[in-house]
Image (tube, rainbow, N blue to C red):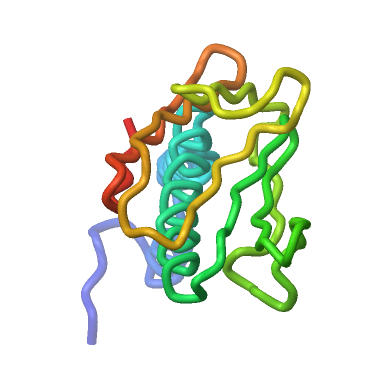
Amino acid sequence: MPTSAPGKTDAQHAMRQRGFTLIELLVVLVIIGLTLGLVTVNLAPSQRQAMQQDAQRVALLLQLARDEAIVRNRPIAFEASEQGYRFLVRDGREWKTLPQDDMLREREFKRAPVTLLLDPPTNLPGAPLRIVFGREPVDKPFVLTMAAGDVSAAVHADGVGHFTVE
């Protein structure tokens, strides 16, 4: 049989053991609040992270387009505007979108509008930015700079199939 503190009945002792104190509840609520705050901060990517992710995705897709141009033995172009980008394949004398290609489908930038700068420039003023990959395994090196607001990222192509993001 359990013993209770002197001067208290078993009923008083049982009531005291059943609930939480206000301080214990407040400590738990503070811990939950801090945890939710940290999770929210980590789940919402910063503007810099979003731009880096877009640049990384573009770099990987440019590498894929380059490889596809060699394998298909047909030129493939990357065409971009402020809102998004797409890939085109040369069909005779005209450029057409790649039909039923899930990887090289049209996409939007996460942080549109995005300012694009290609160095060295290859397109005419007023025309959409276009990078063409031919059937040859060696292309001209270029740097594609993407900027939105005060953040930017650059995709560097070395001309032999390596694409890096800075």
